[in-house]
Image (cartoon, rainbow, N blue to C red):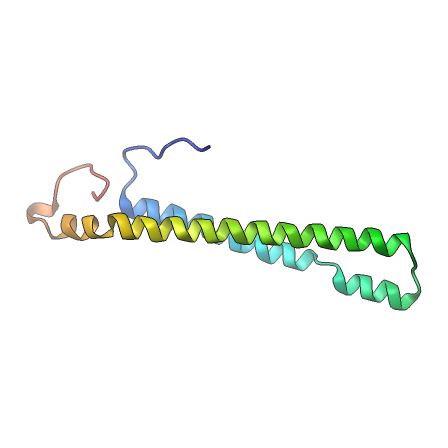
Length: 111
């Protein structure tokens, strides 16, 4: 489990980090989708490759599909974390921004 975020991290910085995690997950999904070999398996079948070779290639394709699903689950979790941060702390940021003098210094909602 990762360490807790340092106290100096603000609401906006937290959202930025969560967006970065989401972007990395999206990139991983795209990379994995490019590795899918289903089309290559079809090409090998039509070229006459038989039996165990195709079975092993199908296993590889299935494994890549599970990786895609895991990356999608990670993306969904990162997006849910940001939504929870906005839900749980978004109003606090608005109150902080609207406070006379810009609110307290060095808080989660600081600048």
